[in-house]
Amino acid sequence: MRQNCIWLVILVAIMFSMLTTSVSSDEISDQQLERDLQKATATVYINTDEGDMEPICSAVAFKRGADNTYYFITSSDCLGDDLVVSLFGDVITEMDFYLAFNQAGKVKMFPAKITQVIRSQQLYGGGVVIFQSVLYWNIPVIPLATDSMKAGEKIINYSLISNPDQPIFNGWVTRMKVSKPLVVNGIENFNAIVLCVNQNIDNKLAVSDPIIVSRDQRVIVAIFVGTANYFGVKKPAAVPINKIITSAPTEDKQ
Image (cartoon, rainbow, N blue to C red; front, side, top):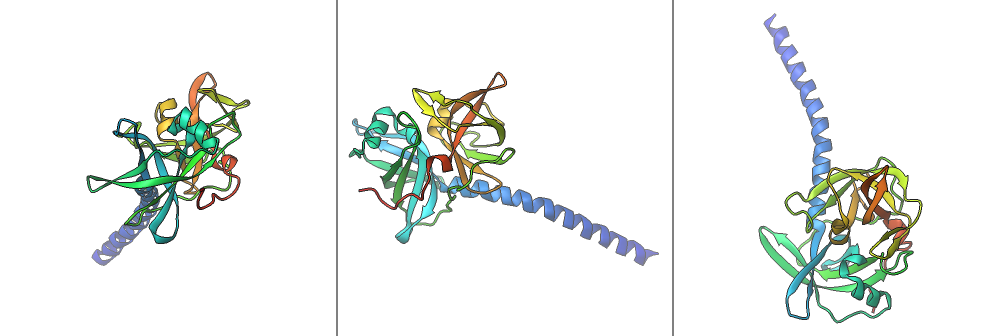
């Protein structure tokens, strides 16, 4: 009788272990994506005319090249209207950009340059900027999506600048595509899709922390552009990255 009880306890322990291992592996996978996104995200600083270093937005590493060269992507809107117009006019300014990372409580900054500006179907602005920087340690990269977001797809954003106290938020893609261009600050954003998220989102997030990653695909799927009405409620809206980037970004723009 005692031996049977021992075997029963062992069997229950094995079944419980299998169940908790299955649950934990999903949780670990999600936690790993959050850690990778956090490590791949840098704060973009600009050297102002007054000589100050001003944080303007975040950018996420999506590709690694030779000699620890990394390529980062962000929304062109975060750079400001004047600079964006200049960039889309193929006038690369002499402004100094830096990418900042928090390593063990210490901020490390690296020079960065704009290698490409990709214009979306907009009146002006409304595209993405590619930064290049050489780091002296390895970081994860989050690739760019080649397919559009799907309804119900789980998404994640790392709000490094706009909400540092609670940087990670989750959400999902709705079935609603904005029927007409979503106009934000005079910019017409085409192909915008409504998102549902677990936080209140305003246009500040679209400017400062625009990158949206799919939990399902583990790729960068979209760029925040602003808010749209969703059954009478304002919800964040984003343009799929594959609607902006129709071909692979080139290595450099001279």
